[in-house]
Image 1 (cartoon, rainbow, N blue to C red):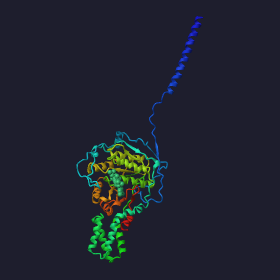
Image 2: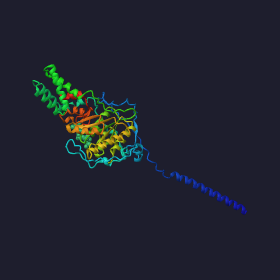
Image 3: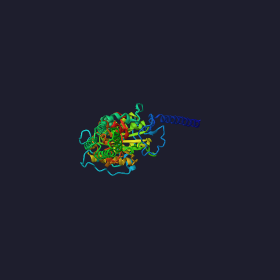
Image 4: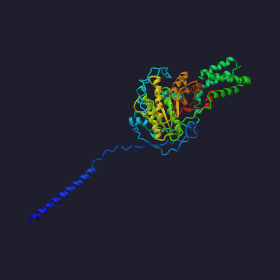
Length: 464
Ligand SMILES: Nc1nc2c(ncn2[C@@H]2O[C@H](COP(=O)(O)OP(=O)(O)OP(=O)(O)O)[C@@H](O)[C@H]2O)c(=O)[nH]1
């Protein structure tokens, strides 16, 4: 009997133990399931960057085919861009490894030459020479952010088509004084030595430059000599022809803003501060958006924080993203590099890089621009380098142009503030001195007051 009890007790203990174990196991599992899940890294938000859907009415006038092999079809659904909040910056070391270069950039402050601010004539200066403090060449280390525009507030920029026609009044307003003056002098009576001198003075006063002035007057004199005293209309016709010859309609004024093979076109914009550089980049973005181009802006003017804000605002108005640094004084080459990278990844048509126009001194600025150029070229060739010149600055502007041309390979000029000067002859002077065409002209402060330069419309406006 005792044995029976013992067996029953053992069985009971085993059963109770088993049940307890089972309950504990079940609880344990439940607890495991109800515990908070491990914190997963935030999913990378991918944002579809939609193509700007604005369709310009009629054929756009600006020719953006330069350098562009026919663009491969770009997905209409757009391409992905990294989260708008945080950029995709690779770690500095990773970037350095990828890009190879590591030699520190030499300090650039040699104290040599200064650029002069166009409006004030003051030396342009800043708090320090950033180039001297830059990180290693080719290893951009500053964090950049991609500022995606708010798609709901997109403006529809005016098509470039016929802009110069609309803006002709502005051009004529200040420059037709020269044309009228010339026609007045030439039709006043006998074409003697005094008249030709007066013609020369008028042309020189319009910043045409000595060489072009002499050429134009010599040609006119030869025609008069060969064909006898002309009627005023004939003389006007000759003047028109000779001026047009000087402006040179044969120059290639296309802007490289179409995809080149399987990559975006890269446009770098340089110029002294105050010439209208950032404004021109913003206006150019609008021109390209009006032509249904997918544009990315790079705010590599990190010298002044407000410049990046200004650029971002221009971009946001037309749905164009801006790659920028939040830090004033960040490495501009890093920003430029990341902008080009973003444009590649988002399969944009073109990336436009705004650069600084002011540094401690000329040498520092030129070294920085040369570095920006070199670093961009580690990722992509530069297809266009546009120098922005203020038309009102005359010879000073020309000196600036020569300095910039030594640092970077200028491929075209944007001549701003032509609305506010009677010195339209600078178009000819710039082209001759630099050997590159004026491609764009700024004719006002309005958002759509930038026009592709049209030699005939220009000469018409001057002589009408
Ligand atoms: N009248 C006129 N004003 C212009 C034109 N283009 C630019 N401006 C004005 O010139 C001023 C300077 O323009 P910005 O674009 O800030 O010049 P910036 O060269 O970028 O100068 P920083 O940012 O200081 O380097 C602004 O007030 C513009 O509105 C133009 O074609 N005509």
